[in-house]
Length: 466
Image 1: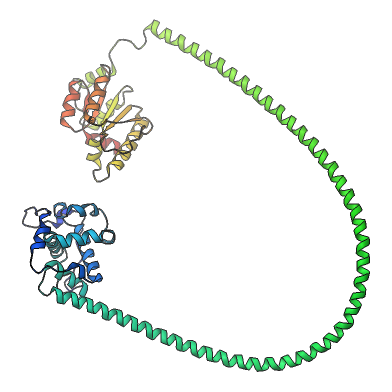
Image 2 (image 1 turned 90 degrees about the horizontal axis):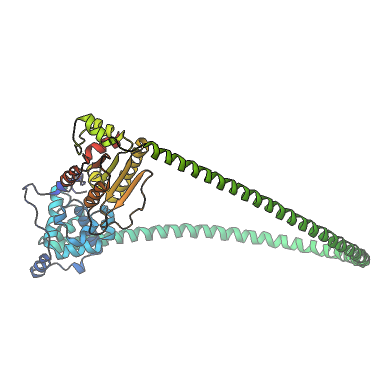
């Protein structure tokens, strides 16, 4: 590391790399390329050594993560979400192309390093490659000398490494030569001993050959006797084999008969099971007819006795209990819990309005998943009907169903989620309490005119977390 270098600050906030003057930096455009082509004494980037090119890509990759998005050329903005190492590895070509073509981008990179990591990127840096990168980016007059010095130091390092490797190989070969010489001496000594042992063994083998000749003659006589015995055994074995084959055939016949009996028994068991299944299905059909009959009778009694008809709706009771008109806002958790206690309440959620209020740092897909999961838990605890509506534009694969107890809707192409929410409120019967969770002022005013209660997104999020 160069002198006076210090760790870079957290680059998670892009505003940390903006100039202190308060003026927004000018965006990088295509005009920078033409200015670079017209500038006199332009460096030949194609002849830069590979180590210098690699260091330039690393320097640009680190700076791209901290620069404001307006200072990042359009072709490099897709690389901003990568880590610096991954940007340098996968985007080395585009990074070098933009450095070569855009003087503004080079200046922005130098300014970022000077502000965030002062002293690390300097023409007089002790590290040759970093000094060469600083000279190329700043267009210093001594750029050629600094780049050549970096290349020479790289070549000297390579030659020194090759020399050390060659010396190491020589030492290794010398040790191997000494080992082979020792092995050769041992082999010669072993050969002399082997010659002496061979002569002794040869004499011993001649004695054994004589002894084996006598044993061979005895063995030949024994073979003739054994062949005679084998012929007798073959005859008796053939008779026993024929008897065994006949017994095998009888056993096969008995096994086939047992298999047929087992097949018949299996068929009888299957028939009995089918009969039992049909009887059980008949009982279930009769039970279903009985339940339908009872249900019809209960429905008739309800109609005769006028159960569930007339009288105030739950929504009317809630409005009277709090002394507010229909469509009043729900600004605290107590009022929200009072409405959620009604079994007929319908909670309509403006999906992205709530999720972007609660966890805007997550991607949209993760926001949807987290919100639907939390609403599912709320539905399981309270038993209320919940519908969450998301804008359908840009959704590649929208789920057709949500969590248990939560209806998930996506607006059609060209239709806003706000319009779908207004349609849901308009479709509800008069008197049913409807809660619309959103902080969109236009949606709040329109649904309150239709008698729905407006629920701020922050209040719903507090209830979901609690």
